[in-house]
Length: 211
Image: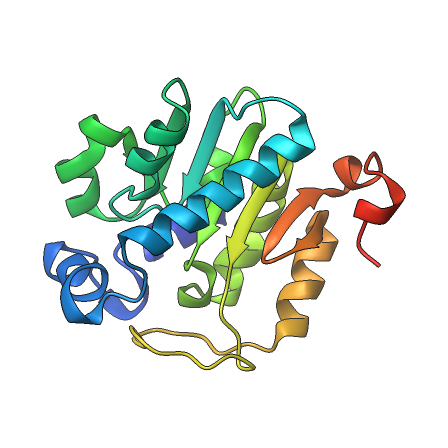
């Protein structure tokens, strides 16, 4: 089931292609929704959160649906020794940045097919899930949750959010749909679209736990 879902989404839903033109349009120039400074703030917050949970520097990062791997250069600036792995179905991204940023071909639905030995200190899945069908999310979410050793950034936009930018193959789901799916997978929200595994949540101090 997961193999079929992964193949089906390798080019995006409805034949959507994540090529250089796509990234030039949405990540560079006047249409870019998150510039370089905003990205640094976003990555810095994620790293600080994971390190607060782990009580040590972040050493390993998994970025699912990484696109061109924009997080990697920022992470390397913040933590030069960090081990980063990005997964994305885009042939262009892997061909262009694979060697430089350690990107591999892979989709959200294929996560269970990768032989990961250990969880990652920080797991990133940013601006991805709302472009996937229900089936692929349900196929991959349990594996994603199990890979969260410290904390995760799982950024989604819902039908309660003002959304701009790329709307092709965009799924407007209610927030409660994601909350239920994440909760059933064992992801516990700690705010600002960041999560920990439920086993980690049980170890947090009382006032750090979600209400």
